[in-house]
Image (cartoon, rainbow, N blue to C red; front, top):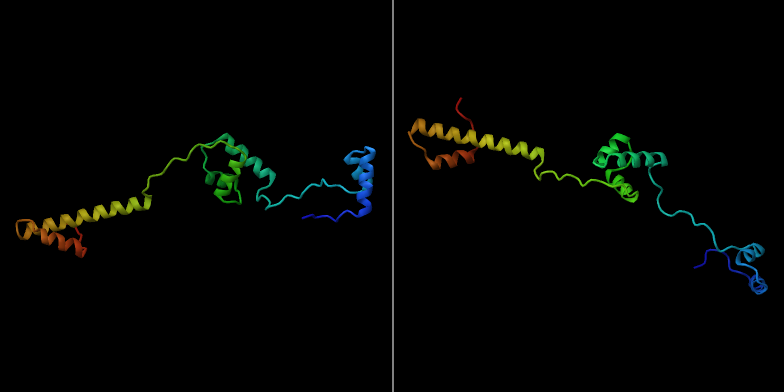
Length: 156
């Protein structure tokens, strides 16, 4: 679909006449006052970073490829997400070191696991000590009941 106004019949004849005379397309366009070649405006959203910020990001990422996108964001105080930084670096062809994979267990989960292990050991110790003190032997049904009830205090 054309964006400009259509050529009138007289303009078309004039263009044909100039073409037959041997004029170039540029000369014809100047004479008629029409031009098909125009610069298109940039489409899409503008970059959230200024040219200066992009240059600093490129320089910092190029000098140390092991820095994470989050580290770059914090060091350069950038107003964009780490994912956007990753996209920009990919577009700028900045080489990156592959990220070191973290263990599947988070620090919080690891602490919970240690607490559970400690509490379970306390509960087993309590049952064992109580059973030996009262019966002189270990009763497995008492062990199960105590674990399910949540009594987990070790003898002091």
